[in-house]
Amino acid sequence: VKVSDKGINAFLDPHNSCDIVFDATSAAYHKEHAKLFEELGILAIDMTPSHIGECCVPGLGMEEALRNRNISMISCGGQSSIPIAKVLADCIPDVKKISVSSIVSANSIGPGTLANIDEYYHNTKAGLRKYTGVGEFDVELHVDDVNLETRMFTTVMAWCDAADLDALQGPLNEMLLRIQRYVPGYRLESNPMVIDGGIRIDLSVEGLGDYLPKYAGNLDIINCAAIAVAEHYAKCLLTDRQVQKTPAIKTGLQMEY
Image (cartoon, rainbow, N blue to C red; front, side, top):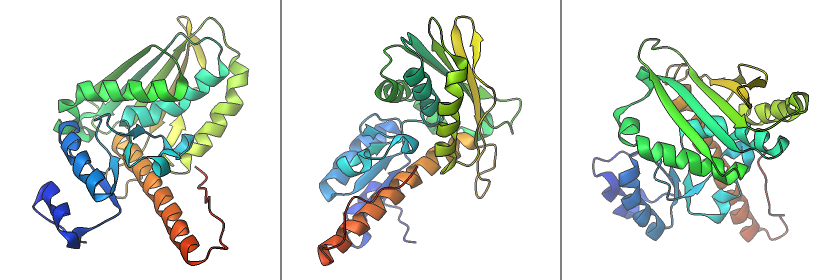
């Protein structure tokens, strides 16, 4: 694996050409990096909350990876909450507001996230808006500096007049299986509950534990989501190249996430 100490300038070297870049710097830096990646024709998978690229949650479809050259992985809170928020918005009529609150270990959140906290809130709301169509959101991120090995917990609340809780079970279980295909540690911690005029669902994310500790589910979920996008893009790119060599091969390869 090639490495460089030249930062973004490393990509100006033709020997370092590539198809995909995962930018895990910061929102401010990605705004500059995105210009160069676009000029070089590189697919940029944005791990920062810069809100430049098209928001993507792999379990909800990855057409964005083929239509855009800059893909936003939104935020860890977005990747964990948006699938459940979409189920609530799709199954409950007239959702007035969606609230998302995440708790993560102090050991799994770094200075980059804290420095980009405003962008985190903004990008998470943008992702929620795209996938749910709801107009109003509250987003919170809490850092647990006492229980340092606690995995990521997220609470999603949909504010509405009424809802059929039994009707939510099927779509929730289906969504759970879709996300678990690329984030095995994604699980529901509660059945839907009616609390203070809203429907509440609690979920948690545990990491794979292959490099980062298992409690760092907030890091693993956005990493796994980014890898899912890259794999989908690479398979489609490979198929297109094979089609160019063998016109009889059908296009339109789909990954089931």
